[in-house]
Amino acid sequence: MSETNAPVNEAVAALLELQEIDRARDRLHERKEHLPQRAELADVEARMAELTGVIARVQRDADDLMREEKKVEEEVRLIEEKIKSEEDKMYSGKVINPKEVSAIQAEVEMLKNRKAPLEERGLEELEARDSLMEERARLDEELRSLEDEASGIRAKITEAEGEIDRELGAEDGKRADVIPKVPDDTLELYEELRTSKRGVGVGALSNGMCTACREALSAVELDRIKRRAREGEWLFRCEHCRRLLVFQ
Ligand SMILES: [Zn+2]
Image (cartoon, rainbow, N blue to C red):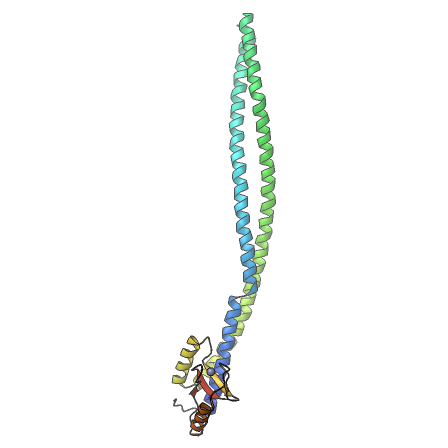
């Protein structure tokens, strides 16, 4: 099936070693992708996003109250101006008609009656806004502590990734050493099978069983393989999973 200048035993050992290295690399990639800290980080980030939304709502409510307060203050200011101008008129000495004086007094009284509840409302809005701002300060504090938590987790992820990358580097080095010992056409077939068969391209024949799919070969197939192996053939295909099959 395959022509090679390398000794058969070396090619078999290299192919099996390559499979082990590739499995190790797959596991490392898998581990890197599914670091438990990633789920932790996603959880903290989701809480941060939620909290940011709450903070924006609290701030919007506080801003609405602020606008209301300004409107009330402006109304109060206009009433106070009016009161002052009425009183100025009254104390100017120009108004002497008692009827006119009592009309002004009634007007001032009416204005003061209008002013009092507005001032009350302004005060209530101010207090409500104060408590919203306290709430916002508390939420900001909570958000900062979540941000700290997230940075801590990110640092751990970076560290874990670095560690995995070092291990991957070592496996890559081993792979580069093994590759030249596997014949080119065998390597090509192995890569194809690895892609289509969940990362495993080759199995070893062990106790009449394919180590890749754990299925026992039929007696007929075993006989055939043994006969061909005696004739110098070294690379077979598993009758069950169709992966490459070698004698270990
Ligand atoms: Zn198999």
